[in-house]
Length: 152
Image (cartoon, one colour):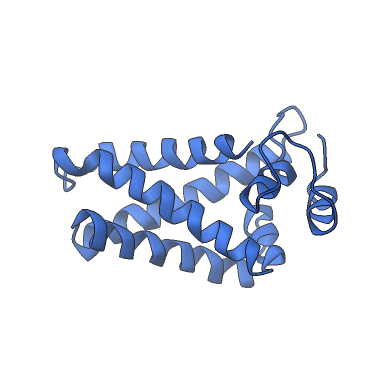
């Protein structure tokens, strides 16, 4: 399940970075990987810190704390791209401000589509160590799964 969201992140990042002429060819793969890891690590950090409601709001299209989380994810991507890949702040900001909102929109649409097998509860569970097999680990993860429609 975790692979689903990581693939969505990677696809969004690859699309934006590949089509950005300001990213040198020899840095594009590293930029995609760095963007993917920065977003995944940011989400995992939010979930393990107990900021579950912000993550739910982010993917549910709500405002408030989710805007702060989106900004935090974008800042993480900018910092990682500048520090690890050596991209300028401007190029890194362009990538982050395109990839993060596109990812949020895509995940929200997939989660809200009853014809899609995308199960955000299981994916969130796998981010916090609940496993990739879709089984809930109990307690907090059961609650998260229930909030996201559990085994859609």
